[in-house]
Length: 537
Image (cartoon, rainbow, N blue to C red; front, top):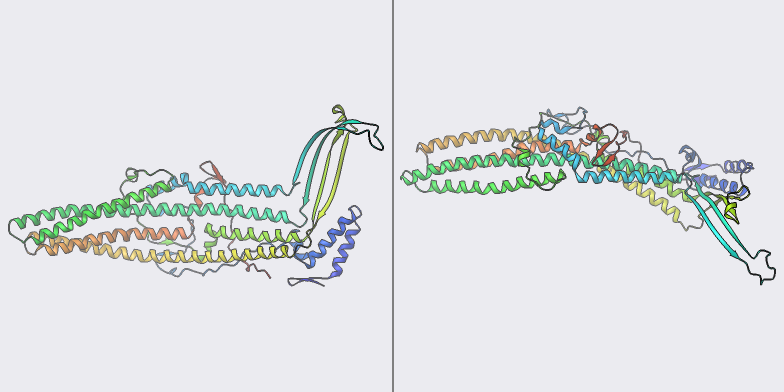
């Protein structure tokens, strides 16, 4: 009884296969013996014979999708602002109903440099797959030609009757390693999975790009709104300072009100350059994302309010993540690619079979070279078997198995991180909306307080200290409100980015999307179901 990793096969079965192969007289007997020995080892040394047949005559384990640690629903799925319906996230940014943002994303998709780099890597992976597929056919072919002029010595024991002669030759030779154990097919399988992963990597770059464009644009609008508040308050404070100064000079009040008004005015004026710097930095970041040199985008962007978020966010269910998020799909495809390398390593346990041969012509004169009697040819079947490898093959198989398990753990960790990002985005969105609503009420009250204090000051009922405090608080609350309103939009962007939305933009063109001058192919569909974890023994 032959046993390997819990699989067993009766030795009598192996001997029966051996005798059946010997009965095939058409094959050289030595080659049949080698095949029989290889199949016997297949039964007890590496991949079991039944598994070898079930895998399509390929050694090594077939890929099985690993399990994923995901909850059944989101923590805040029952919140009134969270909708768990599964929808299309291909153009999630349109929920802001902002045509400027829509145009920026389309431009970034067409021009972003990092996206072109990712697209080039897809083409690289496809070229690597083409190289691997080519190995299924005769690996070497060559056409050779030569001319030889020979002079033989006459001072030998038995001189040749011909002392000199010429030889013309032209031959075509080929050598083919037969993929008996599926090694080359496993390599093709691995490169095919890498192609899929490279497309998913491209999609992930697109998801990141769209999220960055949207976040930078919202930040620009936040700063623009804060600058507007500052400019309005500067105008208001200049008017207030004028009144305070006139009342001080007329002797109606002391100098304290004038000093306080001037201090607040200069504070507001000092804030303006900082905000303007932030606006310029945001513009420069947008230029980078758009694939263009730093340019003043103020005219193109114009003025607009902070993008307003819809009343609810559509999040689907956690299981959708492994289908929608391209970084998770890519991580899973890299597992499949590495899993195929186990079979590549296991193939080294067995002999390699070759068929080599050449045909051609040979003659003494050039005009006879392609004559009917000048033909030559030979065919040479053979095999090569790595023996006495001192455990190198066994440890290489173990190495590939451990690499596969490492990628499984990496994939599962990515799933956990992805779920955390969504949960963080959801709670941030929910609570940011509450904060913004309360700050709106606070700003309205602060504006009312400033008006009341100003009216009382102008009437001489109170001194300027109350106005100073009220206006300081208003400035503070206005800045907080602008940031809070922007935080709602930024949180929504975080949710949709973490859900993996946006990469579907490339599918708007049928079958193939051109990015610059680089073609990319659509990603293959990914099944949500996940069988048992890949294990090695």
